[in-house]
Length: 409
Image (cartoon, rainbow, N blue to C red; front, top):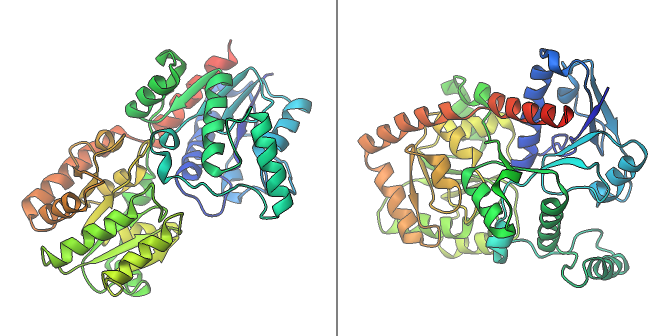
């Protein structure tokens, strides 16, 4: 009996964002597929995590699923060091890493997902803080170690860590997976890869949550909770430079003062590397009463906030996919998104796009949708057609077929 190992550490995090939800949703659907598929009966699956597993991940797992906790007290470089140690002593036949960070030591048949290479295309908007503990001595050791190990090419910053990890995955993974046509072409072009090495498994969205009915009482509850008193534009994602939230605030200021549209802007997500500038702009533009910082929101609040909005926007400078676009389309909300990277591909006909570097263009796009009910209804209808092309069930089925293909090699 062969063994397939899966890095489930990201799916096990309490506060999930893009990659974490990607891993979680794939695993939840894989459990269903594997439980009912004869081809999986003789395969043993081992899921690895740094912490005790969330009961939701363990619930209804097939009998051939094993959940293995690999404790790691340093709390950083778990994948490279602790998971590598596991690979030395208990190496699976196949290893699947649902991100671009692979362990140094890994089976020959390792598959890695690279969601995008924004850190190479727009490096100026990525976090350049050092990884690891804040202790000066440890930081110095990590910095010197990174320089020596990479022959001077990389340091120990978050940006260089992403760049190094993706380059390592491209060179050492037997197969690369990515999530959009744009990302597939971008990765192939940048790393001079044969496109045949890159598999395309598009993302889905949590249909059971976003297609469910939401009561008016629930919408009222969430508005009261976050002090939302007007129609509002909704954004969810980290408040950081890559997500282009500063230009979103500038566009919102134009929308209110040039186009005289009386609404609020709700920002849901944790603070990132440009948060100080974002909130300084909110203060300078005197928008404090009309910009709501919701912070990281749980699933229930997320769905209700999205459903209660007048418009959803994703103004990112770079996205490998953009799942929140599909979530907005599922709850009948029109979308205005950046025209960069994969977003036009994901938005389809269910939204309008704008130049993310131009707040004026962004605000004009918002105005077109907010003041034109006919256009809004057209976008909603097209969005509902667009989401039929995406599901986590389909994504997980394609991943399963790929794993079984490697299993039968």
